[in-house]
Length: 363
Image (cartoon, one colour):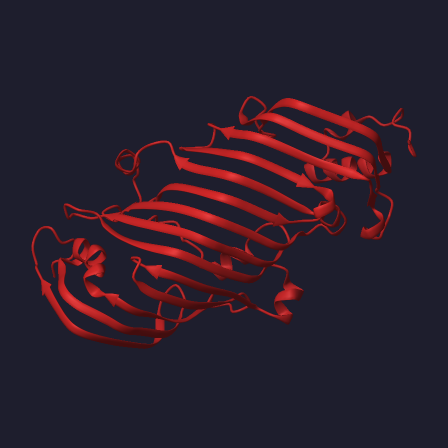
């Protein structure tokens, strides 16, 4: 259905205008030209697609196999002001399999399957893999500054999203994001210098996201993290977090929401080196100009010899024996300083400190 004729409109006449005027003109034409979308029936089976970069049409971002799409009596009225009335239809879903990309800088991404069902307002991804194309040593040898090597897989990722609400409100909004079965390996060469570019603390990094964003809740379950760092020692330092369960709430950069509630909360439970019970609550104050982060938590019942994997390569500290009973903390910190309380209860602790060439810090 056409409400406006394009016969007397020449987009080339906008070419000598500033970009913002060009885009506003195009938006005016687009919103006036398409008022109603109606599809009686549409089927795509066994489709394939190549997706290219908008700014560089020669660069392919993704290849998609086994595309399946079904649509019956689908209608979207773009003149409606109420989101509830903007769309109707008996059936609409898209299923994609075997998404892959070799074009990301130094990384490779693949997704086993993705789907979107309008009736559920949910986008699902399964079997996600994101990995550096080099091995950790080769990657670090090419870096001038510290940069983490990554190998991440995710069993499933489900995002609750209403695309039509985002279209009408202009806000990236999700009620919930559920991430299950993350297996992450990180490697960092701490003998390299830190990047001279200032790294924003979490509050500022969230506020600086260039589009309006609101996520009510992110949950992470049944996940694992293995971190290693290269030092001057022969063996890399490492630590592991097993059985990770975490919840993050109130992720936003919208001012009026931050004025009402500026606390981004994160609750974390995990097993440290598969033995110590770790609990932490992190409160990120999105409104505080000093970018404060508040943390409190505890680690219970862990053989301290496990910590030797982390501290010996960095500081030349050996821990032949010892049992952690309770390590509890309550801290507030920004990028410059942290203050708070730390309680460390232990039993039968023995520590050997060796100041030799294998330790990065010998003073």
